[in-house]
Length: 166
Image (cartoon, rainbow, N blue to C red; front, side):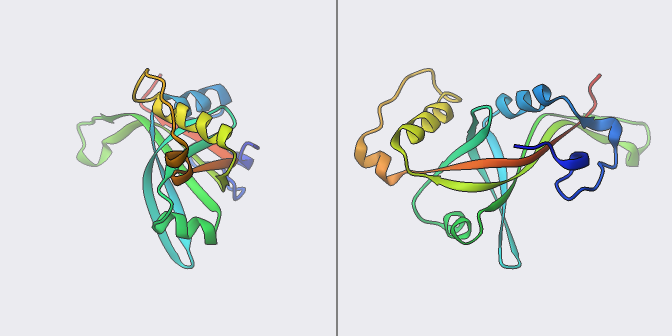
């Protein structure tokens, strides 16, 4: 995985450099801090955005799905994705109505999806996702595991931005 060139996979510098997160450990902390991300897919000339529960293992992002549906169909045709994870939402108030701003820490990245077929990798990913919701260890019956699609996002570029924090 590479850092995005100038904070952007397209080579454009981030407009608000004062808000850019350049510390990779801080970006990774945001990736590990929550359980919901949004993935953007493109089907021809039509965008598709969907929230998913996920887990980050330090190098890749995993999420699960049913075997069929719009996102599966799109990812089979186009494995390029953009993802967004945001935490610490709030408002930075002001006496002027148009000068209110959003407080946040956000990570945006680009990558390619791969459908996980190895059962050990699937179980590891599912364990990480479930750990966001329960401390209990679960078993995955073979029939359920075979019906569950696990998708890995191999991150190609990533950037972070924050506002409203010291």
